[in-house]
Length: 556
Image (cartoon, rainbow, N blue to C red):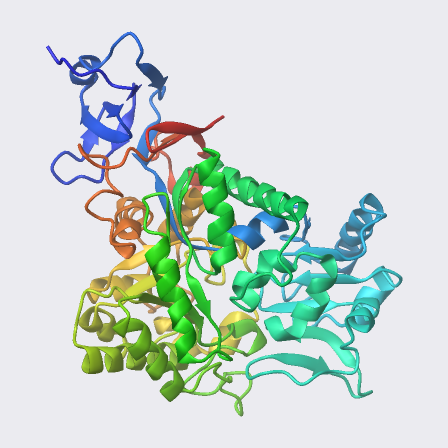
């Protein structure tokens, strides 16, 4: 007879443990925040005591809690209150959505929309301020593309922000100007649309992205509580989708402080890692802040230790950096945010400090420059288990694929992102990439088979946060042309990228990402059997219970 009593038992389940020693189980016992045992229902019944809480999975799958390896918690949570334009197509639908939203918020000084497609007005038609003026002429309005690298503003917003006549910007940023000498309305990258977005009064939620700095002046007690409320909303949204660990991809001390305060209240329901965001206007001595963040926050629930960097932009605004010119712009390769030498110096210094580095690199030119920087860090500092990362890798080359495994670089990729996935249109993106580069675009399986660790995520709020949708997108991925490589993943491979590989990416594979005795009791109970569900219907599944650290953090 087992003399130990579990705090919580999940039973009547189809458990996918991701533990090679025991890959499947019917029930799991949890004690003191850890997995105590996984096995048959009869075996686990011995752990039941008078105070044991029982969760009946009703035959649904139980997985390790999802590890969201690339997202933006603070800004994503704030955007839950914005106008959601995903799936809106055509001028009339756009007009109706914007006007209805404006009518529902008569006192808002600035209106913001999210997720509008680049081709919302039809193939080859770029949105201008004149389109938006005809919809909403008298109130400032801005809408952002799903990738959050391009936004469009009406004239009132451009005037109010002081950029109707343009402004000098740093590399890789652009206010598109018209023949009349005035801004057209299209704003590429954060320096361009930042002044307009600031009109919404949400600057603090974007500081981790826009500057990596701290609020100045510091918020009042009421403002700070409002920011904590935004964070709590984001954490609840993550937990609702079965997420138990977050690897955030923007950050500053302020985000860490807010989350620490929430933790002290007992409200930190997802384990969260916040990086230091190094911008191209910074100097290397500012990495001392990253080191302080890493030293101060080292817990299982809240940690730092990472430096996030943007090397380029995105394909759809021609701001991703390519080796060869864009197929539709033969004179343009994109403009990097750092020179290769600047990035190499940054990588060497961050690596010397023992920090992990994660770099947004979408074009093949950016990917190569980042790999070169990581190689330089190894040559100067010596090889170590650094697990530096490249985020997105939407285009790469045959020559650079094997370098990921050779340098120990993690390929952090997003299955919702390829054109054609999850309803995203193929055009204009695939024509911008060009046919010759299609085999090396979003090349998940190519990288995996070359020995790289591939981790999946959503990049929320760029894409829907739901990991099940990401798993479905990975399984259903189809080549764009006959003869191109099949980059799809099997169901179990896709689950592993949200669990086992997510744990590896944060040096936690010894305690997270699997359901085995001694590991953290982070798990999600699904509404059905994921293995028995046809791939085309995976989106119908949803979490019914999320457990993090042995505590129920969400229940439908």
